[in-house]
Image (cartoon, rainbow, N blue to C red; front, side):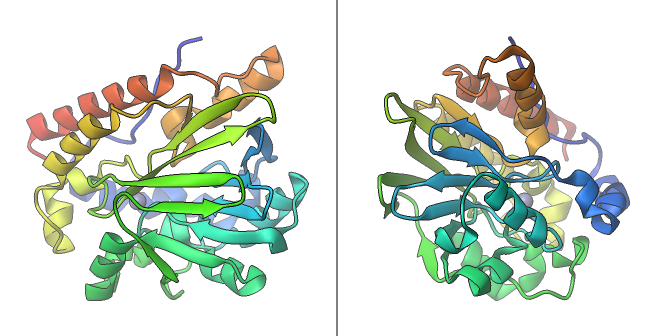
Length: 290
Ligand SMILES: [Zn+2]
């Protein structure tokens, strides 16, 4: 089975910004329609996100690690997914955010208060947000007045986050934001050990010069993304995890899993195929002068 990958609309920046909230309005008003049942990707790795943005849970044997907390108005859905997967949200010890945008850390504050988990995020993105909070794009979200979910622990390139049986290697992956992080870690079903890779931000927003100028961001993020893609090609990944379900066809793969009984998430070619498709898209944006 061959999967294609999807990186959002390909049009000038102002059209993207103008269309952003209208395209999500129904989700903002009726989030429950976008819930999906949680599912086991492999062994101790679970999908607990919704149809719009991913969240992944690892059972480390000594507490849970949650990658990304979705939008701010979907906390109840995340809690229900975690319980539906057979876990107790109170066992979350670590929440790790992929980058400093509202749609990935949105429920982080509420979950931290509820569970006492420590929140981790990229030091680079945190410093950029401290300088200028507008960079979190809260105004584009369903809860524009919510505070930013400031991390308890800053993650820098090369750091390892360890809990129970899990050791997460954190790799700076600038491009979507200057501080986007990718995460690499082993997962296991008790017999096989496989390597999972979570690319923490592949949307083309940071590639737009107009966006970077508007939010006073580095103007070379497009070239930084090129270098990131090249660097990440060197990592071996058996299970490629997406940031938004559409990017790596999470929902289609889940449907295929249920239909066929096969597990399309276990695919050692997917990481490189995804990076190749991403670089083609990035080059296209560069050629168009966006
Ligand atoms: Zn983002």
